[in-house]
Amino acid sequence: NAGVIQTPRHKVTGKGQEATLWCEPISGHSAVFWYRQTIVQGLEFLTYFRNQAPIDDSGMPKERFSAQMPNQSHSTLKIQSTQPQDSAVYLCASSLDISNERLFFGHGTKLSVL
Amino acid sequence: GEQVEQLPSILRVQEGSSASINCTYENSASNYFPWYKQEPGENPKLIIDIRSNMERKQTQGLIVLLDKKAKRFSLHITDTQPGDSAMYFCAASADSGTYQRFGTGTKLQVVP
Image (cartoon, rainbow over all chains, first blue to last red; front, side, top):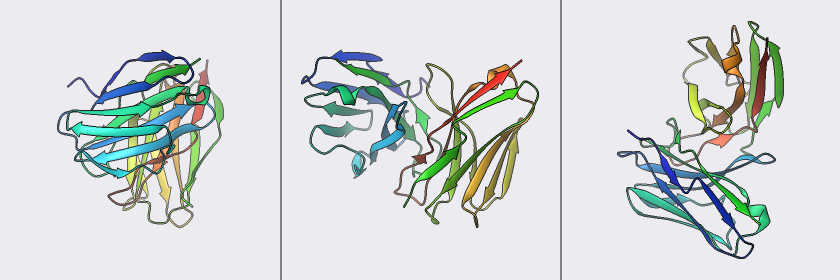
């Protein structure tokens, strides 16, 4: 079991460019979460899927952020027209089923927007 | 409101002493309270959790207490070691269909 896999580990983009972050949850886990981690804001919830269906995207900045889960083995977080304030570590996590279970986090993608 | 407050933000203790971190939550429907440890450059990892049907849980030098009336829960690390130095996050979630809300974290430093 390789755990939750996130790629890339680091991504540097110029202001205004697009960034796509990838997450492969643990096989058999049906819930997939995206969080953003910064020093100032801590761990902020972005969005969550269950059995590939979007359940709650209340944490997503509406205009430039989107997330998909086209199949049970991967999810993507896309940020269009990246801004310096998007710089953060984006963490993907999965859990076995319902949300009231332990989260298994990936190592995150550190996004730097110059 | 559904905020989770965590204090202190920084905690410095002597090796061998105890460390305590406190969290409060607002949503009275919260029933699952995990604690995660994050070492520098690593991902957060669950170290202990407690559900609302319990008031106390203990495992390997970690004790979690839950006071549902006060909407407060706490982590106590006994006999701290240098390896306990890390960021610690509390979280809370309610029934199925909600996500875990995290506290702002506590940076624990265990000094010799």
